Image 1 (cartoon, rainbow, N blue to C red):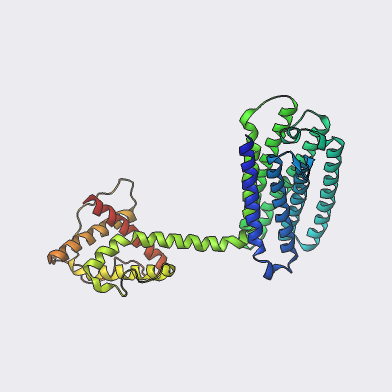
Image 2 (image 1 turned 120 degrees about the vertical axis):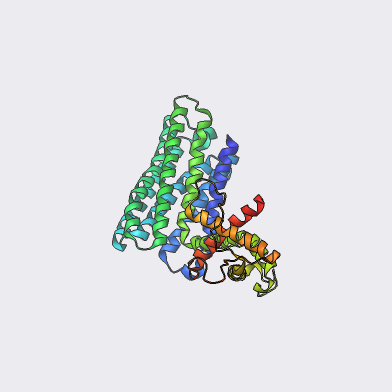
Length: 385
């Protein structure tokens, strides 16, 4: 179980460092912003908390003092929670209210830190086995120390969750609204960590072994910190993630269109403006535009060979939508027209005039989506023979 606990601390620490590096890249243009500097402090404290957690799991001594890593982890976790609460206040509350409530959190956090250090020393933390602080202990002072720490983590989770909903509804900033929603999710997950950790501490004090269920607190902690890291850096990574998602979507469409484009190109080589494969991968938008245009040009060249008479039934699965059935119908017409062109057979009633069944070709996104459906249907019909 120690391996899984260590892994959870490492995951939380890595996500914290990734978030910190992400924000440090903005230092040149954001350093004068007080909220930005507080956010950096929050992320540094988050990194310290989970680095100390990993150190505590690796050995019982830090700087030669037993259980010191645990104490540093807990004190930095208190400071981290206070700093996260201040960030939320500066994000969403009025300046005067944010300043007033920030002072309250700073005073409370300082008092809790002093209390934890005092309890640790009174309980002879450096002289106790590491298991007393990791899995719990029946010793009253150690039990009090651990429960005070859990309360110091649970209360901010509750307050952050209660504040995020109203603040998210008040703001007009879509990115901030999404960050607040993610922050509320992180608060819920971390509160579940607090509940599970409380169960672990009390069952250990009562001599009850709950086995592998002890790991639930570590899993919730790691999941909550990853979510928290994402929420605190949303404005930095969301635009890049959106661009990456758009690129992936375009690339998937580009690949899906290939079988249809290939057969149309073989039938009408003149539709291609440039030799296939001449554009770089970075020119994906251009390549996708060219592929759509070339498919439409190749489709247009086939019109004299497309029979205007009602097509025969196309085998589609029973739950298919009307649009899916239409895509299969048009794909079947293209296959028939390609065969007719190769054979030199022109039907009596051909589609040699008109547009593409009243499709709006001015909306490129909708055009790509529709042609992708036709290309997918075309590929399935080709495989079926």
